[in-house]
Each structure stands twice: as C-alpha cells, then as structure tokens.
Amino acid sequence: MSNHRAAIDRAREVLKIEAQSILNLVDKIDRNFSRAVNMIYQCKGRVIITGIGKSGLIGRKIVATLTSTGTQALFLHPVEGIHGDLGIVTREDILLAISNSGETRELMPIISSVKHIGAPIICFTGVLTSTLAKNSDMVIDVSVEKEACPFGLAPTSSSTAALAMGDALAIALIDKRKFREKDFYKFHPGGSLGERLRATVRDAMVVGDRIPVVQAGTPALKAIGVIDRMNVGFVLVTDKKNQLLGILTDGDVRRMVSKGISFEGLAIDEIMTANPKTIDEKASLAETVEFMQKIEITALAVVNAKKKLVGYVHLHDIFGRGGSVNISLT
Image (cartoon, rainbow, N blue to C red; front, side, top):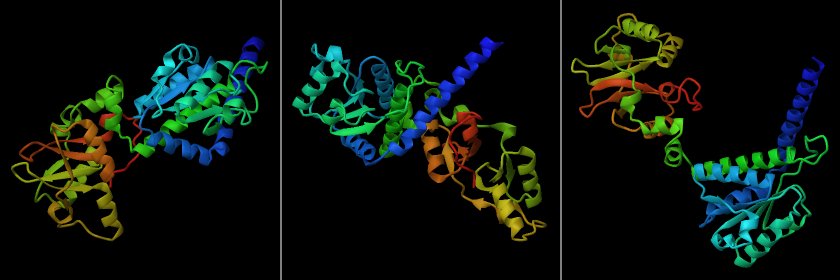
C-alpha cells in the first residue's frame, strides 16, 4: 500500500508543479505576445518552427495545431537544417525557435542563417538574457520556477509551458482569422467532427412524428401542450399544405406569462413568431452551424426546395450531447 501511496503522491506533485507552471504564464502574456500574433497573421509565407530534443517534439505538436487551424506551418529539424534543409526558408517566412535555455548549440547556426535570409525570428525561451533571446525579433517568456523532475534535469514543466504557450498562440490566431467550424473541416476531414460537418442537414435532422408541429388555427393552449410534451423547447406552425408559417418557443411563452397574458381563447396564429429562420435540407452541417451561431439559436426548422417543412435540426444532434458550442435558443 505504501508503494501505491508514494506513486500517487509523486504523480499529484508533478501535476501540481506543471499546472502552476502554466498558470504562471498568464502574467507573462504581454505586448510581445500580441505582436507575435500580428506578425504571424500578416505573414505572407509560413511559420517555420525549430527546436531540438523535447523542444523539437513540442515544436512538431505546435505545427500540427497551427496547420489544422488555418496557419501554414512546418517543422525544421536544426541538424537537417544546417545540412541543406534551410533552403526551404524564405524572407517571407517567420522562424519560431524553441529552447528553454536559449543556448541550444544546434540552434545557433539556424538563427544566424535565418537572420541572413531576412526572415523575422520569434522565440520561446525561459532565459530572456540568452543568446537566442538577444538574436530574436520577438521574445516570448516561457520560463518556469522548477522542473517536475526531482533532479531538475528532464524537461517537464518547461516543455509543458512551451506547449501551452503554443496552444495560446494558435487559439489567438483562430480568433484573429475568424476561423470557423467549416474551416476546421477543410483541414480535418478525417476526424469525427469533420465527418459530422461534411454531412448535410438531411443526415442529422429530426423527422416524422418527432417534429413538434401544429396546424394554423390550433388553440394556443394545445400548442403549448405540444411544447411541454415534446420537450424540445418550441413548436412549429404550418398550413394544411405543410408550408411553414411560424414558431412558438418556450421562451416566448415565459415572457407572455410574465406579462400576464392569458392564452385562453387564443389561436397559435395570434402568439407565434411568423416567418421563422429556416435551413434547406441539402445544406451542409458546416454552413448550418455557422448560420446558427450567427443568429444565436440552437435549433432550426428544415425545409425542402418547395419550402415545405420536412424536419428540424438541433446542435445536440450535430455535435452530440457533449458538444462545445455554447449558444442558446431564444
């Protein structure tokens, strides 16, 4: 039991140290970070990331994150670089060099050559007075108080900090580029999210008896009963030819109740919102998600080419119940 306890205690200590290292980065985010984001955003070439050892592995991961979120990037191994691969670097590119010490021997020839080429250099380093920092155009501080390794030798907290800063850079660029779900699909068609967004509304919509719908002229109280029974937060209103006329949401009902409005004797036509937003059944889920986010709703009526109601689609049915899009039905 004592052996188990020792391992558990050590693991918890490591996670606390590394978590604190990431939290400490928050106060290191400054104008240099913002300038680096703008520099990459305005870059006409690519982000060339380089690093050796653990820093190189972190660099490869940052490349993967950048490329999947709209920023052209590639990894340059320092050793391969000084043996000919530096030929891929142009003055239109940006070099992002990663080194905790800032004194990594293999990086120095790369830095010197890139400066000669004329490409700007951004660095992630833990030592702001290092040779790498002094030779970089933009310095991002990723210093940590200590490594999680008990000997202070194996890169642990420092590599975690560099990885987290890379994620922060990538996400800031997502915002800058106004990168959207459909853009993610372009670069990630094989993932589960990509597969969902590649499909059409017809593939995800709810149909048949599961559509909360009533015909025009239905008593308001009966229509409200449909909202309660179907438990999807709204009821759609059609004419006898199944043309969509309107919608009533549970939010509409709550607002009317708060104003003291009585539904007795009213027809659904008198309280519904006419001409609700719709989406065509042939639309892609990618553009549907983008449209739903733009108008800030979580469910849409689905119509066919003749504008007849054929179903409805909900974000839950696109992303699953654990989806990450946080907007609400109004």
